[in-house]
Image (cartoon, rainbow, N blue to C red; front, side, top):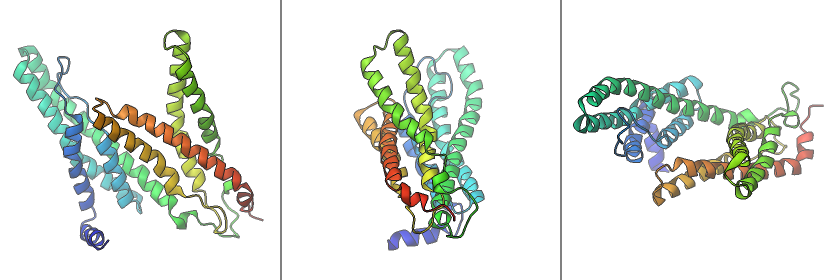
Length: 292
């Protein structure tokens, strides 16, 4: 703990030093996870793994989350430094293409690579900064001071009046139905297409469901009321994503993000079930929060 405290105090000397270091630390991981020999159809650019960028944005957002403007600025700097990996990957793709392709393809690579680099750097910064902003907002909202509500306070919607739980219920009901249909219905034909649409709908619904769990759990409450463990409810889906991603990468999957997404969906479903059960069990305590 003393080592961590000393490191944090050293970082505090420069408000953006930690963000720069985090962005720099992602470079080797991004290169290692993203690099693959370019195929014949790849002239410029390529795919870049987003997992290190998400991790960097999360760290920066949590570190600077006490101030929204500082979080945004730190996220941009972390993304700019992390984009070094994007430049290296695109430069390697261009070098490989120029060394083996025809004259026409070589000219295309020379012309398109700078454009691809600009777009790639912009997307890298966008992903990192957006993640930092979201995590920073989550940190501020989940702070105990933000969740406490005075017993005489009458303004604002209380936990009983929250309208964020319906998408959570919809997600809990939809996931088993889609999983059952996926195992029973043949992939060919109209039924398979309908199941595919339901699967896409499940993925889209997971966003408001995850947001619903977080926002509903962090509605300001009185000190004597039920205070959900926000870190557990948010940490489980993230843990499911991370475990599935690492497992798929170690197994040799060319795209570990796909299994990781399913790991997130499964962990989110379990989280939503537990949260709704606890919410129902504590419904009387939630009702007592209504101002009188």
